[in-house]
Amino acid sequence: MTGASGPPRSVATEPSGPAAAGPPGLAPAVVSGGTPLFGVTVDDIGHLGRTVSALAELPDRPATRIYFDVRQPARYYATAVRRISRVGAVIGELLDSSDEKAITVAGFQARAESYLHALGARVSIWEIGNEVNGSWTGPYPAVAAKLTEAYDDVAAAGGGRR
Image 1: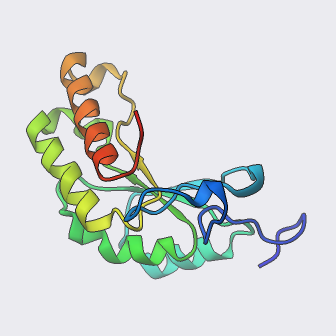
Image 2: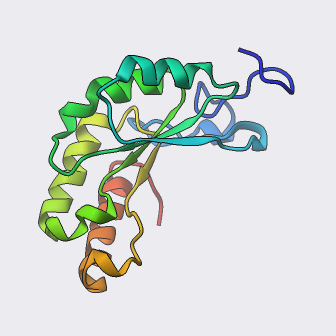
């Protein structure tokens, strides 16, 4: 596919050079040559074929943020993540702010570990917190504890550095 301004630009394809030296087992979050990142959010994978087709038609490879419903296990999203990762980078939203109060710190840690294990090799960017300063998310110490757990889990899986 060719964009209006020249050859196609990639977000997370087969990187090379220093930027490619990422952790083993996790997809690299790479924007080559300072290319702007174009992103979309998918909150329903019910029409996956149409979604993937639409993403593939974009002139630049998008970064697609997938909302992982708090009521769904990681395996529910395996096919969607695999297919979407073929046409662009995947951003995995571990927990939406509207679900923040519905899960304990231990429950969120178990969720993060499960999603990392099942989907980590195809997710380029892990969104460990969503609207974390929102007044509806609960007491900040609890929100901060969840963020810390998710960060630590992603970092332990090779997806971050302190």
